[in-house]
Amino acid sequence: MGPDSGPTILAFPALFEEANRTRAILVGVLRRLAARGHSVALPDLPGQGESLTPVEAVDLIAWRQAAVAAADSLPRPVHVIAVRAGALVDADVPAASRWYWSPLTGQEQRRELTRLRDLGDGEDYAGNLLSDALLAQLGGAEPTLTPAPRIARMESDPRPADVKLPGAAPWRASEPGTDPALVERIADDIHDWIAACAG
Image 1: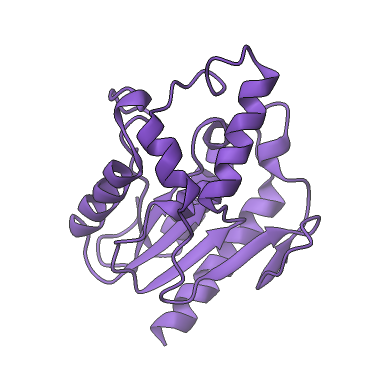
Image 2: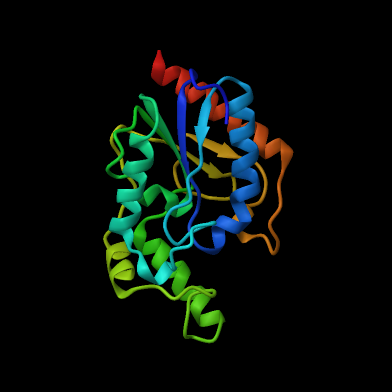
């Protein structure tokens, strides 16, 4: 989306079930950024979104390799946006800037997956069969801190952040949805952040 000549944004959605609950908001943000002159890309990682690869066949290494391949296909410099555990896949992307929305550590993502498994039948993770390799790799994974990312969190989240966003956390909603005011607020912050980094 957006003009080929604009600042390049590479977006990584949340992983697993959280991707479904936040995708409409992320797509809305990217459309607004494209309308402001940014060139945006939202690839599906192997085993996620519309990918035909079964999720049990992938691990964090494969995701990070796919992230690098996506970045290599885009004009530089590349600015990364990531949602929740999407902030774990861009470690090897040579980004000019990073903007993370409520980033999770790998350990936090594992705990969330375990919670979903315990709420279900105890055999899978909210419908996902995950490899032992992926679960092990998540245990030590951390969001990338170089260059220092701008961190956005919801107002209800007590952890430190560069910007606090109004409203309820969409990944906790019972159904996927969108919030136009939140979409506009996020798009504004990302636009201003990229402009500041470019300056």
